[in-house]
Length: 235
Image (cartoon, rainbow, N blue to C red):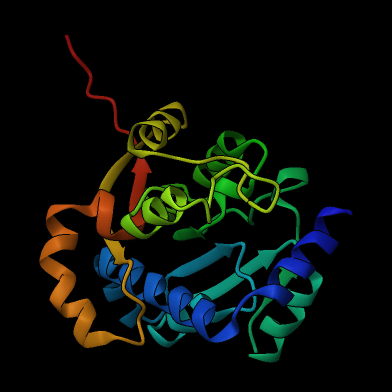
């Protein structure tokens, strides 16, 4: 099965209500990290934000509502068609076999994307090149080892890397940091998406202290603000 068909099936098989809520949840965390850039959207020229792997456009809706000039791409034609139904300017693109994005973006977002790529490092480097002059990247990576996942694995219900796993990479904190450093990036900020579903806001609020203290157990995915690392010249 080719990549486009595989991800058409991927989006078709998702629980839409749950996936949409999670996409929006991560988008709101990204906005908190991008507060300074978001403030610039009040100017006459809104900041440009481009999302790689935008799927049906649920996160892009959030960014558009926040005032960004948005665009995006996905490898799935079915997902792209759905995003266009929302009035979003998106294209069908395989970022591993072509340009990642048009140059001159203020922000490039890749939420739950890097783990699906065969070679995430070249894509990260191209993302940097498309955000010159102090641009920002926002990525999220799934925490494969949160509490629910550990319990599921303990009873034999889940195992990262099995034949049903769509992820080609399984990033921990140290392996993600090595990837960012290899791409010449530094982490400017981090917020975590709770393992508690967005439809349970009171429970999410009650779990906030645990999420802050033990993100390895209670974070479903960290959302990270990245920027090109600035080397300090020494005499």
